[in-house]
Image (tube, rainbow, N blue to C red):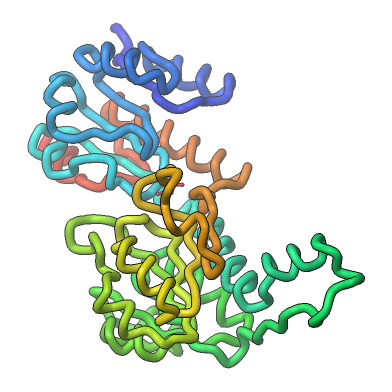
Length: 322
Ligand code: DGY
């Protein structure tokens, strides 16, 4: 029997590609847009990252597609409704990256609190001769962290933040107490924004969360508060954020994600002093990326060989095939 055809639009280590070849025929390997596009009519599976947009029109050019296996947990690059309507299973990699994203978020909180970037610049820039002395930071202990989106990643952030003595409140659609995190209090979004010393965003990007944080929400934050975004850039209305940062109605923002990515050369956030910018590295550790690749490959193979994948966003598609 011939093996199912798949587009492998991310780089895989040789060993993993060999494993995959045992049950799948990779008709394209690599992210060259022209090669991916040309292979769509024959593709039964696509393994891709958020860098490959899959809107409905593109899915129409892939009539044999049975599975999109996304390398990552966020699937905002994929038109989920269109995929489901076409009977295409959409798989992702939840869980394996929660720790890495939470670690980065805590790293940003500590960098803000201890003014690490300013102090590193101070040390490089003639420290022995400098006056005034290095800028003082603040203790995370006793400060209030407001987590927007209390899923796997939000909860992993809460666990870590508590170890630093931070108090945690959160906002989520589900506001039942979470086992082991009963001391974290669910609150309405406005209350979270008004009370928090640090607001950290951990929601998926979908139509309901697009520009969730806009001018109105930023205006509710304390002038001393920081906004952290390690979710998706478009959860924040970026023009409104630039304005709030210019007017100093909030103290600053630490952003691992932007809208768009990479930013335009004239993006005002690139030049603002009260902004820390990172190039979308939430999951960027050797161990986490390996676990994500492994899970994405297992998802692809499972669906294309008629088995249950480790993680599927629209399992109804698989149920309908059974
Ligand atoms: C995700 O998994 O959605 C991350 O943003 C990828 O790095």
